[in-house]
Length: 231
Image 1 (cartoon, one colour):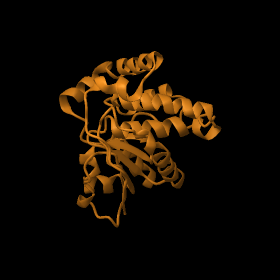
Image 2 (image 1 turned 90 degrees about the vertical axis):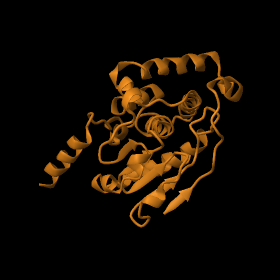
Image 3 (image 1 turned 180 degrees about the horizontal axis):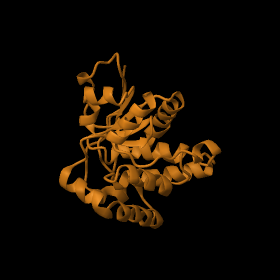
């Protein structure tokens, strides 16, 4: 089943951030802080040299994976990881490469553009992802590179359901997928979404969400653990 959702505007230079979103000085300061965190360490440099990886990153064990469009169209990989749901947040519909009777595919077409209103999708994607989580069904969220658009969708979900702040969610996801790099417009919208959740008290932690944590795993470690559990 394929569900197309809207279309967003083409890419523009980052200088339009201020005219598009009118960020405050404090918001610009916080965006810069996240940029500095993103650019630290060897993992991001490895991404600049080699790309977004041959396999998706495991965000939450037995549930949430984050990757690129190659992962999203690789039938063997999806079957091996027992993925049931796919959220494609890229600009290209690649679902024709997959059997539609075996995957639930949500296609949200958007550009990786600071003008793109990605906030409009958070409520829907959060609801979808948490439903999958509660049903113990696996989902891959991807865009072109698994770096900006899909990472933003995952951060919004983590912030609402599994972590108290954007900073907590960001550090957690960065540990799982070091190459994440949401554009400045997306980071600004995440900051404002954090404020929404704080005001509505939706990110108050519970005993259930506070226990959600898992060590960094490669796909090989993940599959080995599965084999041991099935023995």
